[in-house]
Image (tube, rainbow, N blue to C red; front, side, top):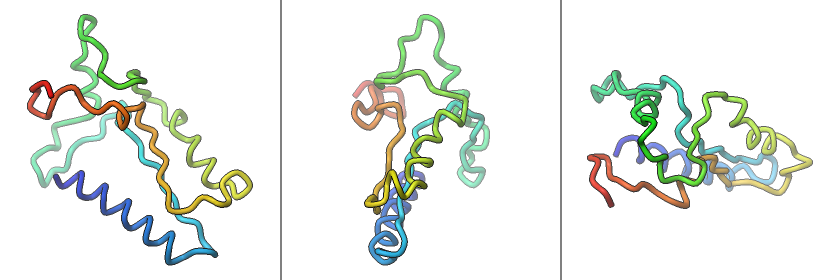
Length: 121
C-alpha cells in the first residue's frame, strides 16, 4: 500500500505542477515497470532482502513467462531512455504536459495473473 500510494502521489503532484506551471513549463513523467535490477524494498518495512532480480530469477526453464505482453525484462537502462528523450525534446513533445508515459512491458493492459500471495485471480 505504501508503494502504490506513493506512485499515485507522484502522479498527482506531476499533474498539479503541469497545471500550475503552464504555459512556461511543461511537466511530464515516465512510469517504468519492473526492471531486472537488484533494487530492494525499504528497510523500514523489513523488505531490504527482497529484490526485483530475485523475483525475476524465480522463473525457471519450465515456468511460463509472466502474463504481460512483453515478458522479457531488460537489465539495460538504455532500453528505458526513449520516453525521457522524447519528453525532453520541445520539437517532438512541445504540446505534451501533465502526462506520464508508461513503459511497463504492457503490464498495465494485462494486469497480474496472481495476487501477492500467489493465488490466481
